[in-house]
Length: 470
Ligand code: BGP
Image (cartoon, rainbow, N blue to C red; front, top):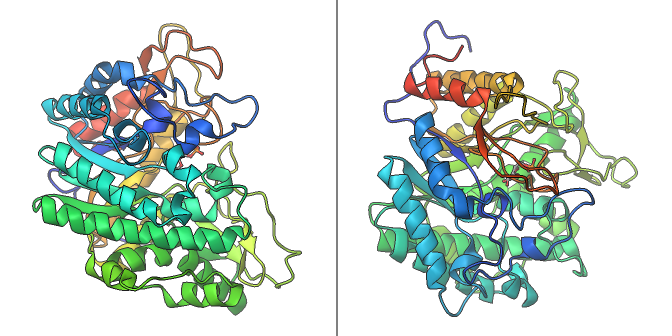
């Protein structure tokens, strides 16, 4: 739809940025922190591990001051479960509580709204050793962990996100490194884990409402519009299948408290039906999110799959679709350009996605990730020029404003990432931040912070509440 006049961004719009604990903090075993599945995982050869990352643990004051200088209204970060409970459950690590108290105080003292992700891929290794999300005890551990967070930080944190990209952990567990490689029937097991995570999320949402009546909580999956590769009815059905399996399975449960029908039938067809215990569905139905947070990098395109598996490409990552025999297969979208890492760039798809989610659930939306990974270069004179990132963000923000004009209720935009950090599986040379962190894959250098060109651009954008887009 073409609009003659654009609606402005709402007053008090949460302009911000995002990070996650394991990708930015470092100090992987300091002050009593236990190991997470990320700390124990193998990394692709030639890429940095997460031991030091951007050393935010020791630089947090300086980092938050820089975010404040950019004018951030909100900052979305995650808490490392293993700093709070080094073994996932049991005894609380006071030093972990202290760190996040200090961090949150620093954020709040600059007038920035903290938005906390409770769990961003980094499951405590001690829980993984006991079966991780396959073991129902992890649901209880998560509930206790959630309670600890609400009790300790709920006086200052009003916005909570339960689980980052649960759908990517299930669909691309191998790419993200959170799946146990020794599982016998990985997909069935993954959907069992998925069920347990959904129950854990519902319990956390209920607990939040019980303990913190003024706080708001929501899920944080990765949701994107799925396009059919052609107007062939079979391709359209494949897109419908993949939307259900990738997107609506997660949000229908979070919002409506029920399994999506297409996804459920897919479980039955493939033999992935999870075991559901008495009381689970009641818990799932009883929980309600206050908003939906979602991550968007690119739309995805799929086509019908013949069913024998020969047409499926198996080399995907969290933003490159793989496929499943007889259900859908990944396809290229010839209308879209790709970034250096093969991810398609689709700002209009962002508007499509915002409209689709809002039409379906009618809840306020916040974008908790969107951004461009690139090989930024530090030039003489402390200069980092990243016009490609500015262009990427500008085009997405333009489309977000169009979606707002379409009537979608959006209350915040927190692109990935606030500061340079380590990519999930492509090292630290794939940078996303507004702030450059001076280190290489293996040479930590001085880790000094340098404002990129995009820093100044975003600062001006925020200062004008999005009016100065160009
Ligand atoms: C999302 C994750 C983030 C982040 C981002 C960029 O899926 O939630 O943690 O890593 O993708 O991906 P990458 O680091 O692989 O480039």
